[in-house]
Image 1 (spheres, rainbow, N blue to C red):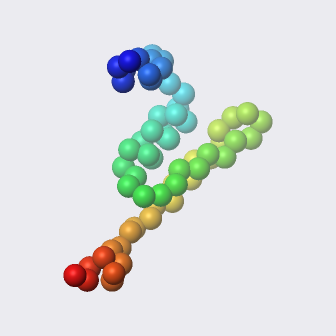
Image 2 (tube, rainbow, N blue to C red; image 1 turned 45 degrees about the horizontal axis):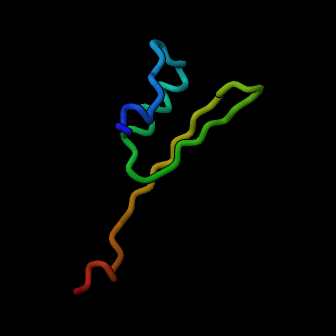
Amino acid sequence: MTPESTLPAAPAREPEWLALVRSKVEGLRYGVVQLVVHDGRVTQIERTEKTRLASDREERP
């Protein structure tokens, strides 16, 4: 099974909210993208980004 066969084909025109979610996730290293749904429709997209710092233990030899 090839990787291409495991993913569904993208529709010719995706919903606006899906394009927004995709753009929020693409540049995210650590964090959360959260969708808020009302009456079966995405009404809000929240992105929380984390900045990870190396701990002192990781830096010591």
